[in-house]
Length: 175
Image (tube, rainbow, N blue to C red):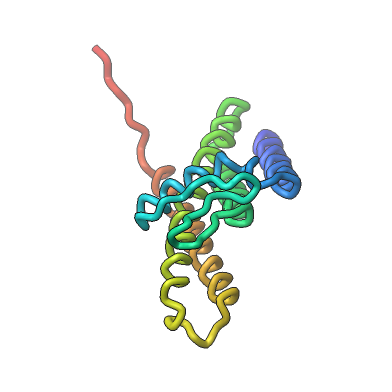
């Protein structure tokens, strides 16, 4: 029980550190999240994104900017916390605790890139079809779409994590 509390405390400190870091950085400093997201969105939409120093990644043909607020860091923080907490039953030692933290961090980063790319792709489609939800302003549509995609992404990530945790470990028999 004590080891689980230590790992969960470390997870909270990591989450706080990510949030503090995000608050103080520029878009150029979020290259590790913005660049792969722009590549995935570009591959899905067929739009070319180029790095604009101090701004983010811009698609000139679509007039769409993937900027600091589009990095998905808040989703990554929520996903990391959720995965670490959901995996707490696998913590029994320092090594297993470090493994839970490492896997949770890697999975939350990967999910942030993919879910954020989905969100941005949908946002680009909605921007090209403004009459779809004509009763809402563009910012309201963007907010609702972001909430729905991020919530769905967290639910899907949780389900994938639970299925992976239930899967029996593969053991190789060596002669």
